[in-house]
Length: 79
Image (tube, rainbow, N blue to C red; front, side):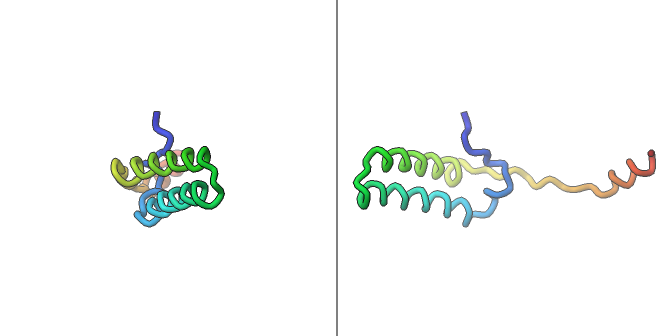
């Protein structure tokens, strides 16, 4: 089961994927060391590990979809 749709265009830039992984990792560390909540630190750490795996290690971007403006003109001509 895939929880992150890696074909979504928001994940195409590397900085977005790194920001997600880093923010989850920092949140996990805050939960562990600042708030002393091991349960939530483990949950968020798992989210960080999963997002790192999906967004950094196995990420293969889908080819961009090309818009064909001539198709819309042909459809209007047939109406």
